Length: 402
Image (tube, rainbow, N blue to C red; front, top):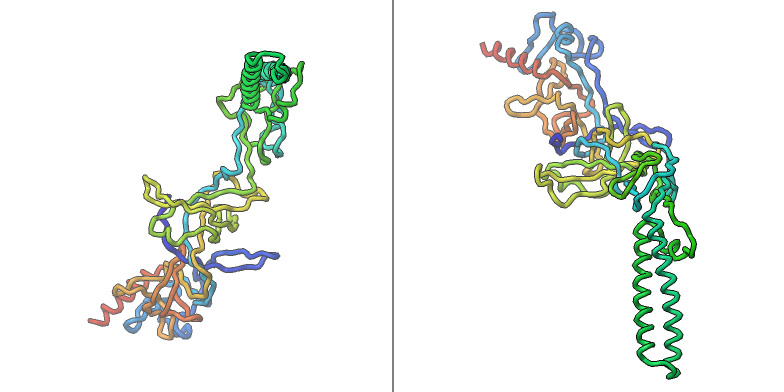
């Protein structure tokens, strides 16, 4: 997992229907002279080959500009969102996933639902013929019959003893037999319920019932993702036979450096994107209070809506966790900033050509850096290959010193 930075994201809101789409502003390199005016006019540029002007400024010919692949951007105030950029992977919500095993051993007689099908809670996934279930139901019916008999005998002996017709010893024996019959019947009922039969259905069994087939049902609604059985196969409770998941919600588990954990809390908005350009908005739903023992990093869980099925579990994504309220700010590409005399600087276009200007930087977001001061809206600056300009500037200053 890549180490993240405390970043700030420059986003442009584009209204689409009733919603808002967020996108990163893109910039094109300069290819023609009319796209970029170095100095006040074209006459301010020197003839090709004379690339140095007064000390502190750089002037380049059109051919040199194109060869250097320089680009110019106009500084502007735009919405700026402080965020953490993190890589992640979409996973199923374990709160909405079921791995379904048969509670009885037996032989598969039917399994009609195909992988990928939508199912509703209670739908039958398979029918299993089970001698185990048949034996358990027979035991319960026998125990239930003995309980009915013991209750009748106890009632008779209790009445006779109260009328002093029978001995107390007979009354106590009948009471003991009733207690044993109750324990046996309850044990037989629990055995049936452990095989997946509800108490209501078990108590409704009547003498002569042949309960030999078990209907294996899904406990949740969702999509059947896996099916591991065939007709006629002998199955038991030792392995899952089906996997059903509700794909309408997915999770992203993100690893976060411990220094950034204090910036994240449940409820924060998260922008999610993938390599194919899909975008969606999610939310932080859980911040793990413990650090990973191996990496010593924190863990954050993000939840996204997937009602339309546009996202797939296992997909790699990029997540931007909004850690502060949006604000208006000027920002520049990181590639526009160069260190000159240990000060962050930007090459700004002026009447004399291009000159470096010290700027005060704020937060960073991906390839964008917030500028707190030193650059004003409307000013034009170089966005890339600024090390070429820095080298030319150093050469020009060296020549003036001689």
